[in-house]
Image (cartoon, rainbow, N blue to C red; front, side):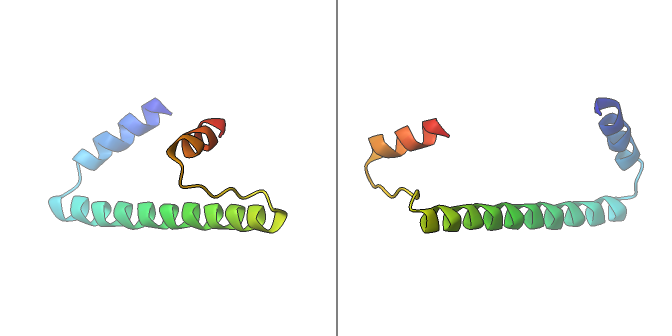
Length: 71
């Protein structure tokens, strides 16, 4: 995998400035799409936990730390 990545980096270096800018825009869009999918998955998980009654709400920092460290 590392060799593949290195090869891709070297290939990108050979692109024209316009191609690099286009690639940059594509990567930004792909990252946005990935993040949206991640948010959707988190939403679905939370919705399931809400339905199951296992979703925990708290504004206490110590409780929040405890919940986060358990995951």
